[in-house]
Length: 428
Ligand SMILES: Nc1ncnc2c1ncn2[C@@H]1O[C@H](COP(=O)(O)OP(=O)(O)OP(=O)(O)O)[C@@H](O)[C@H]1O
Ligand SMILES: [Mg+2]
Image (tube, rainbow, N blue to C red):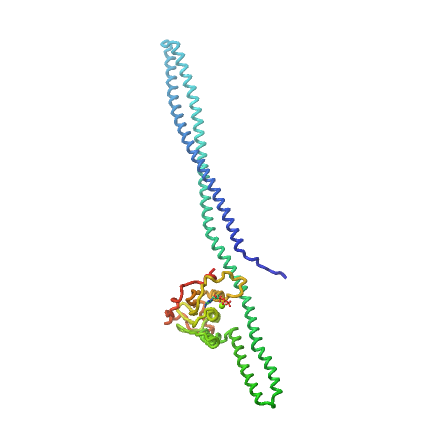
């Protein structure tokens, strides 16, 4: 058999990898930036040099032109001497030849220099072009890396959030399994301590009655009365266990009557003052929506009873234009939802609010807990009709649940109760 195990998600490790990639990218950007800066310096140096060389070339070209003119003059002089040799002294003739020769040499040297300067200028121009390209490319890389960095750094938070979200879902899943086990344990204990004990007891008492029969009718009568009371109380226990497992009224009658029954039971059993208000046209919802809304209300009322020391709990169900809105408001001591422990893993208690939120999420509902110490608590869930509407296959009503209703705009003033505080500890 093959066993599959999913390695645990470690968001710190993923974030470290992400951060070191970001660091590497930042270092790369710095390096490329350095290259671009060096190339820019080199470009400035080359441009300066090019200016100088160009200036020298211009001067050299002017010199060559001047020397060409002078050489032409010297040659004309020699031609004149040759035409009229007798009119010139020997010194004049020698001088004229010497000048012509010097001019030729000077011109040759100047031309060589001009050629060399032109070559140097062309070389420099090529280098300038190349270095300009390097600067442009480096600048481009710097800006591209910058964009990538901006994008990635913006995503670090999102990534961490996503990983946390996945871990949160995984924790919820394992908690659901634990909650199931816990529920079974509780049901087993309730049946064991209540009805099962009673049946065992009954068996003994019936044996006793058998022996007593005909001997002491008075005693027999009392015993039977006692047994009757015990059976009734055990029946109540059994009904409570069954109700907690799955309120049958929910399937038969729907959300509102079941809630009414539950609130009546809380009043009878614990003396909790409760009030149920229904707004809009009451109608059946999908079984999933009905059980989810019922469980949310049940947990909220249970929390109010257990934690809030309230005098009264108001439950309101509004069949509105957009969907169903359920709220549970108590006038108890309240609490700060932001101060609930962050970690859901390895927690023994404190799953009520998480489960409510999860049930609402599965229905694409909006779940809010508004509370402040000393100012009571409001739990509110809104489920859109797209998720709550009973279909035409017999699940509840076939009426159009989106029909306008007069109660949609009504309010019991719960908004005044508290500052609008989200259940921060569970917001991911
Ligand atoms: N109506 C309320 N009034 C005052 N405090 C509340 C109320 N609802 C919840 N709390 C506080 O929020 C905590 C978390 O509630 P939650 O239902 O998640 O867990 P729990 O009731 O402690 O345990 P569990 O529901 O898992 O049995 C409670 O322990 C309590 O301190
Ligand atoms: Mg609870």
